[in-house]
Amino acid sequence: MQRNCLWGSFGNDFKFYLVRLNVVEQSLSIGGLGLRDLRLFNEALLGKWLWRFMNKKGNLWRKVVAIKFGTTSLGWFPSSPNSSYWCSLWRYISKCWERLFPHFSFEVGDGSTISFWHNQWCGKGPLKELFPSLYVLVVDRNASVAD
Image (cartoon, rainbow, N blue to C red; front, side, top):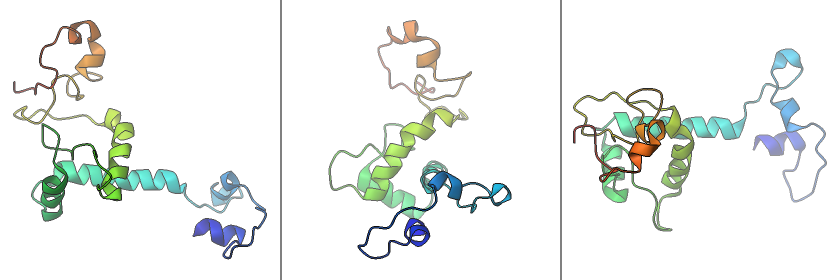
């Protein structure tokens, strides 16, 4: 809608763009219109849903999503979409997860919901990346910290 308003293409007629998008997104103080990057903003909102899913375990909507789509083995993230019947919102959230996951760190607690090898819970990254030669020898790569 913002693009259509700025460049005047409400109908089917083609209009030439008079201003580049990177100029429109610049702050007002340097001559832009101060509009936010919508792709980045959308990704931030999807990340907020991920955070809510992981932290608000008692909410009804979270329980419905977990029952409808299933969860990963540790139970804090919906399992990956495996069919075309998935809700498009959760499909987009799953795609966003891959980009946001490296920026998450976890508090261990009892260790039952933290992956020993795949989650960043100890040090500066997942143990599978910190100790790749040891990870090659592992029998149970999906073990939790509690295991």
